[in-house]
Image (cartoon, rainbow, N blue to C red; front, top):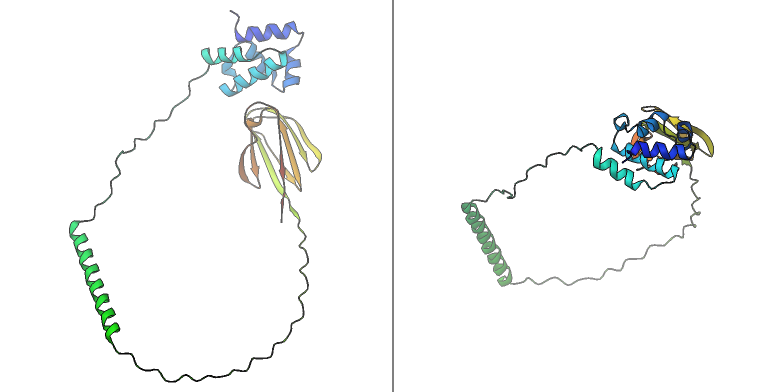
Length: 241
């Protein structure tokens, strides 16, 4: 049987495409395309990138990527590290209240109840003292003044708060950036390279490998641009106050 790389190379040559044609169309560096066709998967950083590159390459060539991805996972996928699970005690230990303390608490409650009951009986048997006649006092109602109506509150004008958006690439790949309606960047961003834009209203980020890009908004980490290796567009707006 032909290997994964041989199948990809043969299909590319049958369609009359060069390595540079694939690089321009898929925004994947030529050295990674050559590594795929040579079955040199160790030259590609991670299983997720390998399977992602195989998928988009097959879609570009018009062939089903499933058999090739399954073949890679069966014969080449690197084992994942597993973390040992902490051993939890099946029994929750709770401190027990000593029996002597329970007896003391019950005794205190009994004494308190007896005292309350005795005071209630004394109050019930005590003769009531007559109350003096009540006199009615007429208080003149104060004169009310009418206040003028308050003016209606004026609407508060809301304004957008500008912010900064920082993007860092974990591997070299294509990224398109539009800031406030103007194209700000459209090229490959190198691995580890960071770029920052000041946004007044809206920033739009577009790429076909969103999980390769990490975001910082106003200096705070905001997660990845997305997941997978599918074309994705995300829009971030300025907050209004």
